[in-house]
Length: 469
Image (cartoon, rainbow, N blue to C red; front, side, top):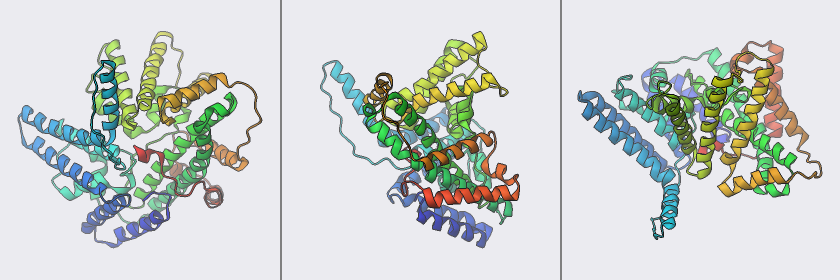
């Protein structure tokens, strides 16, 4: 069940109405059942893995808390980590591992054959695995008490608005909200509907209309000149942003309808003046997860420069690998790690990077950061290294002028409107920004968004890009 579909637009109001009609003590049961139904809509078999993950983390956390011996605590933590990451490895990374293993064996003249596993990647497995692991790790570090109620914990794992593509929530932030009785609120309803409307607009009108142009460019880059390719790369930057930002915004709005505030996952990332700032504004829940559970345990900023650089490189490479089992994702993550290191080097040595007040320096930083991020997206979008290299080759070689490329003017209008809105929303969330505007302006915006959705929606029920992770 995807957000931009009729089943979800029927499902959501039923869940919200039922939630408020039920007595508070029964609401968690209804939400849990609705979340399982939502998840099984893709494939009922998926429920087995998420139930297993729920039980492993629930009972591991209790075992960790129950034992006073650090050695015993570690034993159960390692059991939990190996089980969770092992499942993720089998379903997501086994193919990449076999490819690398047989390639290395071939270099040494050894014929190696590993069994092929034709497994369908369960939707959202990377998201809920990291969410449950954050809980267990916090119990181990003494930052979190183990949840005594299996039902409440299961709801934390499966809460449907953020289940399949985040944001990756922390237990101490989400669980208390799920346990607290909420009551109908005009503010929550109005802000929730604003977020859902805006999210549907940027997904269905922006992302889905850009998708055909991006697909055309990436499927045959040699057929286009450098200018066309650069336009296509820019389109993909906005496609993936609108697609993932759209999902996250709908998730926030859906949760807000029942009084639950999810964390913001995006804060106008393309207005960042550095790579560091970009990752503070893009997929915030993932970057903070890696900061807290990988970067800081590796030493964080408390180590010498060379070790810090290695830590940064490891974190960003793992972040790339989290996205997919492909060499392209590893390179994509590594690029950001290297750029982060280079950026800090120049900042410390020459002080030429400014991310503070708006001015010439910041505007220049925003443009440079956008170009770097856009070029890095080539590896993210390409299905293989050879495809990515073909794109770079075409960018470099196809400099001859060609017939003017004329994208749909309506698409360019909506894209321009989205960019203007994004600039206006700098450091603000759409619902909060919109609620402060005069009534006539709010309804003008609503009318434009509704008109765009009804008249200019792209491909019907196009899945969200991040569902594949």
